[in-house]
Image (cartoon, rainbow, N blue to C red):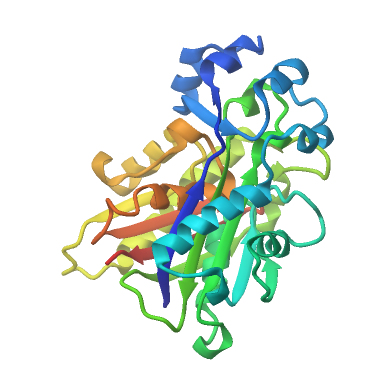
Length: 327
């Protein structure tokens, strides 16, 4: 079991809405986008003029054009998590980072963020694309209590829009940028607990979702959609089965923020009521590994006393889940 002491999130200020995407003349209109994926807005680290002029035809140039870095986004999210947990950076004993869009091959993102925060502790990256938060939490949950320091900072920072070809309407409508942070402990109790963690992969599908170094995001859309719905449904059902029959607390579902239509499909298959499904994909797009944890962070106070069933899927093909009980 892990104790969850705090969560934080950050979204860049620049809004990438459907009207802007329609203005790029890539064969979409506002209604087509909303009907197809249920997304109205996204946030991007890239200037809109840059996207309008280049459509991001060379992803290698995107970092120089960006208005904020992944490290800065992670720092914003981490400071929120620290404030909520009532902790100082000096109390963090380990930093773990991950996601789909590391800015550099080396050094590890965790080392770069820790340095920016003034933290001098062991750091490493543990990433499994959009499922990174699940793999990180599952890994930490398997550790012996004495093997970890008192507090671990878990980060996921995504600058997905840097890897998107904005002349390709299939990908342009989906993605946004965000960062999430969580502070967990095996040793220091908190009112919030994480149990029932899981993680799995099917390497036979590794080719279905890809971002080559210096290249654009690509996926086999139909196959990935089928995988996402089927696997998320299985993870949610597995988590539902772990909740004691006499449990009276409210149960809510938070899934990988791929697109709203996919999540609605999962809710129907798992009998999750509309009011018990929490998502932010409609206003922030698919933010990769940061997506699901940012949803929980945004509703941190509102969901006090609830049981959160979180299920995520991603490239690899990978998936994972966890049960979070909020005190």
